[in-house]
Length: 66
Image 1 (tube, helix red, strand yellow):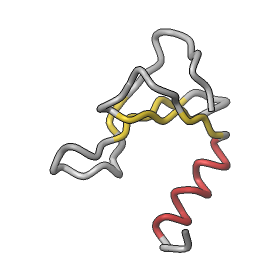
Image 2 (cartoon, one colour; image 1 turned 60 degrees about the vertical axis):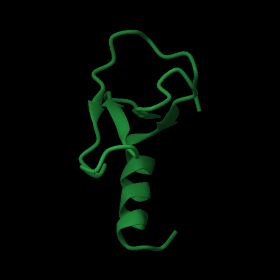
Image 3 (tube, one colour; image 1 turned 60 degrees about the horizontal axis):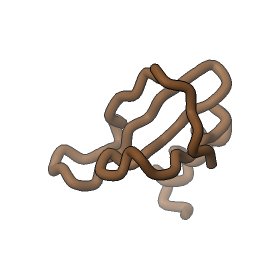
């Protein structure tokens, strides 16, 4: 996890967030990392994954293995 990220990251709402509002995450992808944060609490800690780890996380969530 990382709380100090460089300014200007290309944040966007995750396509995996629902359209009902309230429970959304934003992601910012770079060549070395995928950063994820809660849209309701952007000032708090951001999760940082390698691209490979993020792909594995999404795969596991999709397959309901977690």
